[in-house]
Length: 364
Ligand SMILES: Cc1ncc(COP(=O)(O)O)c(C=O)c1O
Image (cartoon, rainbow, N blue to C red; front, side):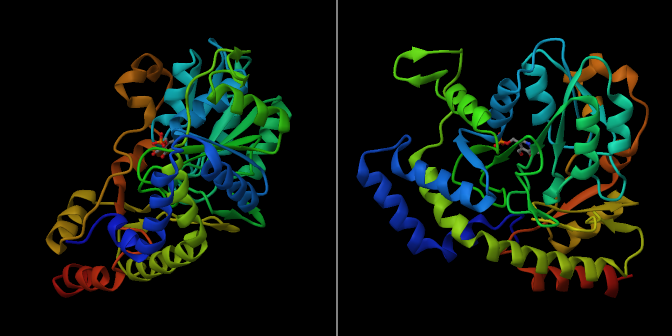
């Protein structure tokens, strides 16, 4: 069976290195924090060229970053309408209101024009998501943020390792976050996340917030939380980080193979990668004019698929009270057409293309 994300294939490839690193942590007696976490943070910092603070998940990273940016009840924060729920959920958990910006129908990234139209007196910031592994249009977003005195938070949960021109993902806003959820381009064997910023002041704040509001044992300056990355996860991530660039190269080659195949099939449009962007292809997603028919063919070929995401956030039941102001938009269109295909550095692309040929070329 072809896996949607071949995490076991990856473990097989690095088994010796992983088992050595895992054993060293288990034998050390230090399971929270310690040398492994400090070393990972230094490596993440060197990779991105910015400060890095690890925490327990991407969702925690968002909440901690938003708290450090002083989001308050009554504030409004602009988020993309077409993404995983976490950015909007974290804004709402802090008592603020998520305002849903539409997307570009080809790149599927947040639309700066839509963001601009939603900025009002209560707006405090923008969360841009690097959807499916490609960076959002930061030049325009930074300009809007600067003009309106807003902060810009980069949700790079799906895009650690992506580039925009000469800049790395996680360095494109005032703060950034990523997720180490197992199926992410850089994933561990449980939950994990990190926060990035070039600001020393914000780094100090997020570190304190993630550690019970404390910098000194049993002295709590602010109300914080417990959000820590386990040493075991840090050790796994250090092994995988050393292979990340080569994995990203493999992902791009696999995406090219898909692109070449689908270029000749009508009614299927892969997510466009904007000029200057290199994607991590956290997902290889395309828009299918007739999704039911496309999925039926994938099923016949035995190719797994997922729908990212079946509903725009403005239609989610938990945001029902906010829905009234939104009309049918490109996020609705994307949620009706999107289909994601198997993607990771260990995806058996030859076999997948062969199977696709059988159902798309030979039987039609
Ligand atoms: C865009 C985005 N933001 C945030 C998150 C949350 O990350 P985590 O699952 O590590 O909490 C995810 C996870 O899928 C995501 O895709």
